[in-house]
Amino acid sequence: MWRMKYALQVMKEEKGVGVVEVILILVVLIALVLIFKTQLTSLVETIFEKITSESAGI
Image: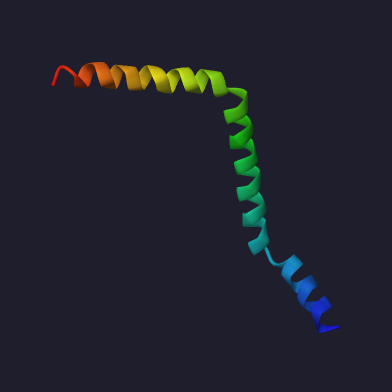
């Protein structure tokens, strides 16, 4: 019986909302990465190529 009361009390608290928000944000970020994977890969490769070519001049 006390477990049921505790479970209801935990559900009423707003601390759990933060966890749900974080999970939703992570899901959206992962979806964006999957959607724009090729563009992100080419951007990172371009940046590293530029860093490598400019570091050779140092």
